[in-house]
Amino acid sequence: MSDQSETGSGKPTRSVVLAGVGGQGTILAANLLANALVAHGYDVKTSEVHGMAQRGGSVISMVRFGDAVASPLVPMGEADALLGTELLETLRNLEFLAAEGKVIASRTRVDPLPVLQGTSEYPADAEERIISLWPDSIIVDAPTIAAEAGDARAANTVLLGILSLALPVGVDEWLAVIEKLVKAKAVEANRNAFLVGRELSENR
Image (cartoon, rainbow, N blue to C red):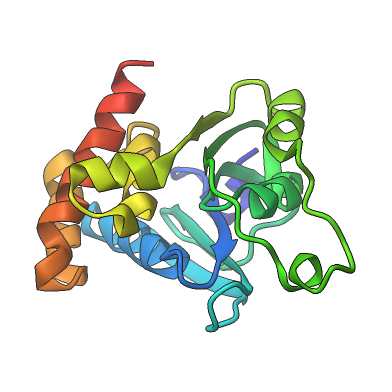
């Protein structure tokens, strides 16, 4: 569900929620997404609802875009897409999705602190639960795909590539933003990872 009240007669506001853990590049993915949308001419607002810089802490970023976006926060049940870099974080944040929303996630497990401390268990069926709730979910082994493209750390960019076909931004705009925001030594691997992800989406 898009919030048309924020944009009047113009394009309705659309929203993407990105969820993962520290060290997976969730915030970088949100920045790449936001800058690609700005380059395309959208009004864009972003927020990091709950982020922890240390590796392993939950990170949730939100990107909203349209003709005129009033709030950077995505209401529950109104996200057009959820991009998850970790399975449990994806499962935890499904409530943000609108009924017609898309789930794009990595088949990646990072044990949270309670699991490491032995006070709780990681759900072994996390992927199955996501698919049961959202049957059209796209779940891939993003680090392996990224490694084949040049660097496993570009897993976040693989997911952006998959997401990109659902967004009104051209390939050249995406690649220009990757070149601008990614460290020079990692540009080629991220560029390749993005294109592989986009091709995966095209072939579905």
